[in-house]
Structure formats: structure tokens, C-alpha cells
Image (cartoon, rainbow, N blue to C red; front, side, top):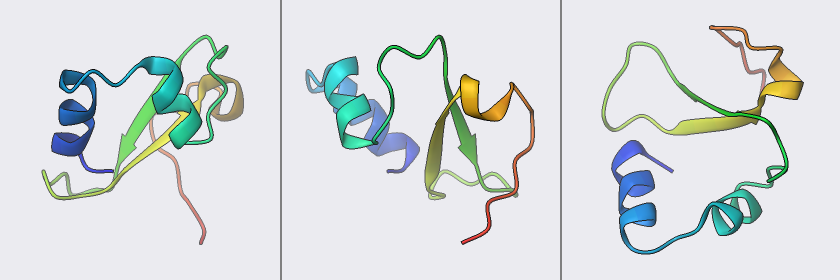
Length: 64
């Protein structure tokens, strides 16, 4: 999901609970962090993580 898609999702009435379900996130998490690939670009995909899994780091490296 890209940034504009995320905005449209919530503007279109999407709920936090539905968002968490779609992204396989724990809706009971204290914080859902949003990461974007560098260099930042409006067309980059976003990735979402519960803060309990990242420890609040500012940069994350994803191995796929």
C-alpha cells in the first residue's frame, strides 16, 4: 500500500481495525510504525510494524 492509498483508505471510511486485519497487524499494539524505502518517494510502498517488534528503531532493513 502506498501513501496515497493509505490516505484514501481512511478517507473512504476504512477503520483502524480493518486496516490492521488487512496488514496482518495486532490492533492491540501500542503503536503501528510506518516505514518507507529510501530515497523517499510518493510512489514507494509502505511497510507497517508493531512497535513491539521493532523496538522503536528509526531505520529498519528488510530482507526478502
